[in-house]
Length: 162
Picture (cartoon, rainbow, N blue to C red):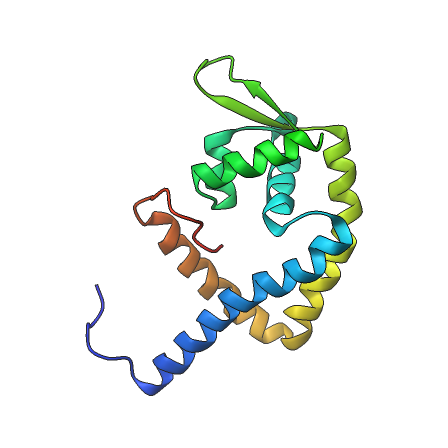
């Protein structure tokens, strides 16, 4: 565990910037993305995870882990996507108590339609403000922070940011 003393000036500036990015960026992306596509960022993350899964199918618990959403939050998102015909819920054949989420053809079509605007927003919000060296350097640092968060004991609270 690190030193418990106060943050130095550089650490404090880094921490404030990190908090600002992790708070403002998702909200900014969502504010533009939702009206354009009818999808929240959580919806989009679920559709992406399912599109990349074998047979476009994941157990709800695995989907929660993949998207870094709590079990209660993933259940609400999957239920909403199911009502909209973008996902189907099916009983797990190996464990009748568990459910799987399956991406429908309509869900895949919605994801493919949303991808260009999402990519444009990500570029405009993040990558247009960084050069190649900054991206190359920051990538492993952010991956190490994400891995440390992934290794932390799980809770059923709202998501840890990925």
